[in-house]
Image 1: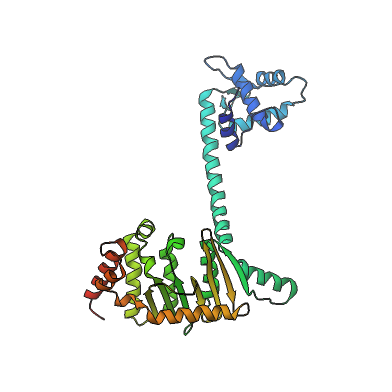
Image 2 (image 1 turned 30 degrees about the horizontal axis):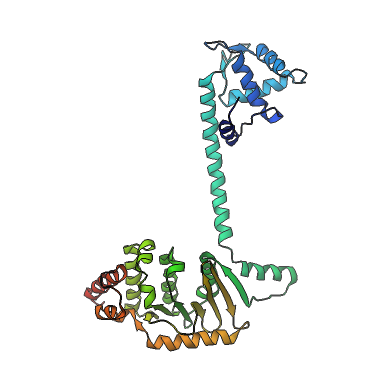
Length: 349
């Protein structure tokens, strides 16, 4: 009796146990193994066929069918042929041939699954990169001939928030445009934060004016930041900002005591805005001016008012950090101080 664990392993290799037609490959192997003497000796086809018929009384198994199944067992190395070039082949099976056959099938199965995984990975990446908003607009236009533009959409999860803000804010932004980013806490988007933050530098390099606003409270989330962002990655992001400023790119990162009466949001000019509704689970919404111009104008007005009162990262100092209540030896404060000191020691080009 084959146990369930062994059955599961065999199924994963494409070998079926039981009494169905699909399982007759293993049934024939079992018939050969049962009639072997010890030590095993080679058997002629006639004895194997007779044994199979004995195990399946009343069946209509033909010699040609048994020959085909026997050949597949030989091809998979589960059964070995003795005197292969003789007029009458002799067949032998024991635990060694079975192991060799299983190893061969396992190797071929791994290769097959790896090929499938490669295809599935490509399909997964393609599907994950889809912007369903653009897809819906294109589909409706293709079906009706009319272009309908989305004015709002609901967003679930940080990955979708990142994709939507990429396609509606960062990618369309051109020289002279303004992107505003209001971040009140790091917690929802710490994982992958370095890669996501890089896009603000890419936009600034195109001449897009980037206003990135952070609260002092966000900097106090020391343990959370340390757990997700390595010192090197954090230092690179800070250094990238300083380098952008030295190159004259239109980007500024400022810190404030906490925006009042506004949202955690990103906007492109006053045309569209994506804002966070809740952080656990992460839910957000994207709207354009057609949907609610007042909401966009109010958020931007509050942002700009707070922006004027905020301090830029380029003006950070140990005294300012101390004033904000951020411990000078905390992860974020120490990394900031080290980068600012290093960059301050560098000669201007």
